[in-house]
Image (cartoon, rainbow, N blue to C red; front, side):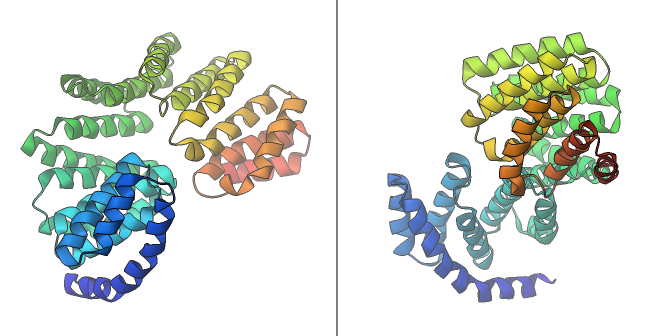
Length: 360
């Protein structure tokens, strides 16, 4: 769609979105957050560029401080920014919405769609760092969808733009993204090189969280190469560090990955122990809802493979009571893997085969 037509469409939709968003403002204000209340007042009393200024502030707060308590406010900010030709703001919030689709909703196909619809913004943007962020979040969409060639190209674009401003965080993120792609592609040599480079960039700016993420990716690389002792050493240090620093978002993932290694070494007791710890850690994570179906499918599979029928049925009931979280998108893969093993244990071989074929 030509840019002019796109902006015309945005203009015609804006009034309806502004009206609907008033309800969202009211809903969030019920949280009794003084900053949100203050910004809502300013938004209601202003128009045009001034309104966009306050919407931008509110959207940044929602994105970074409330873990997207209301994504519709971010959407209306993006829409108004494009209508007012404030393309830097528009691209920034487009990136945040791609992140929301990828990491909060667990629907990277929506992130990919938003990227493809929004690429026209790039030529209008003067903020190089915003472009780096845009390509990075889009690259993650393609990585999650296993479209590796496009993901690598986008991470290369991140690095190209980030180097222009020496934006070390995104230089590191681009390398970490490429390392994860290379790992999944089986190119372990390149994966090791870029992941270590990423970690050095993060250390240089005292970015503890991303440094730990790079090390976690390295531990996965060790595991894929069968170096389980090295992977365990790296991951045990990460778990200790996450507990010490209160990094509760990473802790469930570290435990889950540790369980995955124990599955490979066939230590079923240690595997289940790590999965229980991962589930217990969900309560403290901002991504608990996203991780819930992965962790519970994992422990159901473990108990099925351990032939522990009582525990298997216990977790199957939990899953059945929350089935809507398991049956769509990438979560269904984990669900199917567990179900095929459950039906095999029950000797329902026809069902096991059906689930296995869909899983494949």
